[in-house]
Image (cartoon, rainbow, N blue to C red; front, side, top):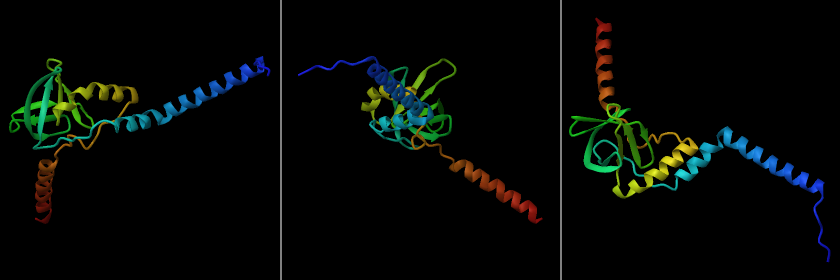
Length: 163
């Protein structure tokens, strides 16, 4: 039984194959495979949404702060205590929301289930590595008040046209 040895041509062929595989994987990564892979990985995380009227556990700079009922959710903020306290909201994920206060740099985290707080570091790493977009279903802004205002303005405008 003979042991065959690799010749220079064999090494060149292996190197070309490895290089081709690396180039193809890099191209897929650049063209959108990064986000696609990230979406699949993010599905492993829990999915609990928050909305107006839900109780949210609020963490301030990594420490538990309080549980409060969300009285209003807008595009860039969350209101608690009957719209008396406005908290910033910068990013919405599958099970948490995050905001940074511009006044003092405090980091706020909003979650529905306290036990999920341990997963936020992993979720943030996945978000940054795979460039994930926001989850529109979590902390969805409530535009019902704006729609009522627009309807009233439209009705006023329609009344002016008839005169």
